[in-house]
Length: 433
Image (tube, rainbow, N blue to C red; front, top):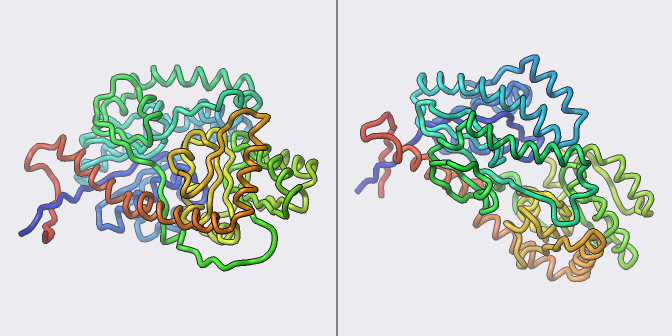
């Protein structure tokens, strides 16, 4: 007996794609590469600023990658954005870049759909649920997401993390996005909208008509994040943080917690990543007398990151504004117990079997609570081992990209069959049952 299996032809559209920068920019690459690995006919549209990196890493798929031109307007907006805080840049110059980029991508997508008989268009980024999309009425059903957003700071933590111009601009941007979703109705007309959690579902623009499916946006490539071979070692307990050094990551609270930890036990903190707050936080580490206990390593390419995590004992993410948190999953894959803020994305991933969630009760208490969690794990190597093993098992069962792409292919098929009439232009592959 045989079963007919629809093999969709998929076009992935994103404003940027990079395995070096991490964050949401890596998501389009994972989708594209994994689909191609499965033998799915797939194409990718990205901005031309991705060309240099992709030319070195995607040569075998080069004929399937199309680039949105890097216009003079894009270059000017990119240059101006370098002088703005992250969120202000995202809602201003970044928005202009994404809007004009999507306009160009829409034109390329319509041509590719006609030329290659593409069955479904997938827009995995930007992950914001509020932002409008120009990918609509293309001649193929559209799937958008997984999205993750609608974050706010914990009560009492926003002040000091955002200046007043940034707060005002972000609020105005959220209001503005509602109007733009009428002018850019891609999310309203999409066949399927993928959301990471209920918080994100609630932030979708009013009036959408597509089916909403819950699916976490992040995953782990277990070919890169291999199961580590850990051996007992002497020396101080080693904590590690990985991520951009921006204000909402809460490194100031982590440094204050580290001061409390080393007052009681030998310890070391490694910070991998870079960003505008690096100099200020290096100065704070010196002020707190942590110069011999804290190391700032700068930006580390993702393929080199496992070597840093395998030499650590505990991963700490004190972020106050984390929608997702792929670094948590990567740490779990390396059998590290995780300490993270009980707010936003980390709470979607962690449970007591594999980590400690620290509630952001107040600015005064947060560093003390982080230190208490750090000391608890530092003093209990058996607990660290159990949590690390549980974390690895959870990643293998729930967040492996191989499993995620299985689900994504199912979603693509559902998008097609729910819209296309019988006898449409689908390939059919017969598999034995």
